[in-house]
Image 1 (cartoon, rainbow, N blue to C red):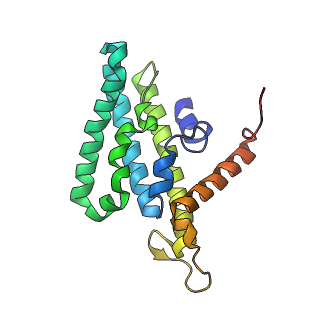
Image 2: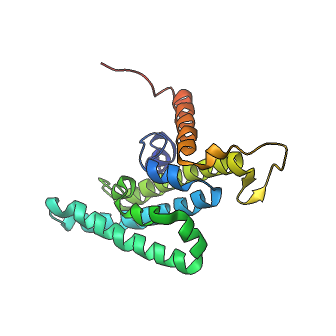
Length: 195
């Protein structure tokens, strides 16, 4: 269970390890985009952890990265095909960032170094859910500030002018930076200079 909790909070991929920042900033203009990419990444990470755990011990050291990338390419291509069939508009909204998950450092690490299958799955599940939660949170904040909606439902109409910067990449970086600063403040871990 420690692997699950670490991936969710103590070693959150985005907020602590700073992995997956590009899709976190580029895709999360809406809560639905954040939820979709988060769920797809979590599922791919979970399956990749199981496959990698089973295959990697039999792969020569110099070919392990290539095998991990190949596994991710197959899984992401399958997930992309399913999403295009089920919801082409959402697939278009995620753009190039869904196929690029095949080369994301976060997913390449799925199940890395775990001694047992349950530990690999718990770690991947925790990190996948942690990644998804941050993407949804960023999407909710950016959609609310930028359009006054959450998951497409109007929350504020007319009372608050939209903050259009929130829907742009620079606005996403500012919001993510503020979220990172808040997490560092609460956890009392970030910002120190060490010799």
